[in-house]
Amino acid sequence: MSAELYKNPAISQTANGLIPLAGLGRKELAQALTDFGIAPKQVRMRSKQIFHWIYNYGVTDWDAMTNIAKNLRARLAQTFSLERPEIVDKQVSIDGTRKYLIRMAPGIEVESVFIPAVSKTGALCVSSQVGCTLTCKFCHTGTQRLVRNLTAAEIALQVMVARDDLDEWPSSSGERKMTNIVFMGMGEPLYNMDEVTKAIDIICDREGLSFGRRRITLSTSGVVPEIVKAGEKTSAMLAISLHAANDELRSQIMPINKKYPLKDLLEACRAYPGLSNSRRITFEYVMLKDMNDSPKHAKELINLLRGIPAKVNLIPFNPWPGSPYECSDWETIESFADRINAAGYASPIRTPRGRDILAACGQLRSESEKIRASQKRKQQLENVDNT
Ligand code: SAH
Ligand code: SF4
Image (cartoon, rainbow, N blue to C red; front, side, top):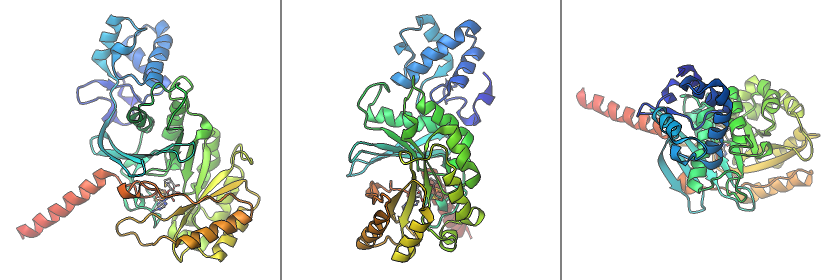
């Protein structure tokens, strides 16, 4: 079996020596079966069958694959595993939000959050990296160094783990609680576009997990050179983490703005493929007390967005231990929303969800990092003891 199939060698084999198939794309799956020795003429048919079992039915047991002969199933089972990665922690908020901590590989722990529907759409917020290279001042993930990019398999597996937990197999069944996927967990998806693109192909495959491309949202802090390309490759919806409508303030809270200032960012937004009134860009705006929440800021925002089919999502700032900002007062948020709305832009205020389990936007930070930090502290204490 060719190890190069799996970008990350750590997931090329499970602890029991088997090769995991769940999370692979069609091409990799076909390659795995070829390497296994399936006759070339049969590879297409077998990989189609197995793909369907894995992604439509969510099976984790080879014996469930009734259209594959028993002896072949037994041989496949000796080489390949259909297992999911382990959920090392699951927390359920009083509002129904579920946060999963999933161990993808030793030391690689990833958070994803399921936010149940208030009206019709329930979203799974997935991570694209462990940590982040950007250091937005209001974001907890931003305090953590980048550990590594996630592979396409590791991104698709977050969706599969949630589908297991929500008991929503088969994918083709009608009513689902998880209707949308948003790349708003840990990391900057546009810095991991190759794997994110492959993952979206898996997530949107009609014979598999079967999400519509308009139900996928890529959220970016503004990696300008990747924005249009991301739209071309994925046809996903775009969300821009804007948070400030003038360069001085934006550069202060989001250092990436120094590299890609607002003028360039907005130009890329205007060129986003498929942009129209029915496919608007969502601009995320976190409400930070006395920082970006005045009537003057609202006016700047309206001027900046002029001419772009846009919606503004106002996010009450979610504090985390040691965070340098406070959330704006409720009346301030409401009057800010009214001003944006009066200018013709939908401006919903996002209801904070899962705050009690630190699952809200920008609060994710991997457990492995916390564990490492506590180990470091312990070590420091021991060193002090030894001196
Ligand atoms: N890196 C990408 C996607 C992950 S962040 C991006 O920046 O868009 C997902 C969203 O959460 C972004 O809009 C981000 O700005 C927002 N966010 C980060 N920290 C937050 C916090 N403490 N409170 C509210 N929203 C936050
Ligand atoms: Fe990274 Fe997004 Fe957080 Fe900024 S807001 S530090 S880009 S995860």
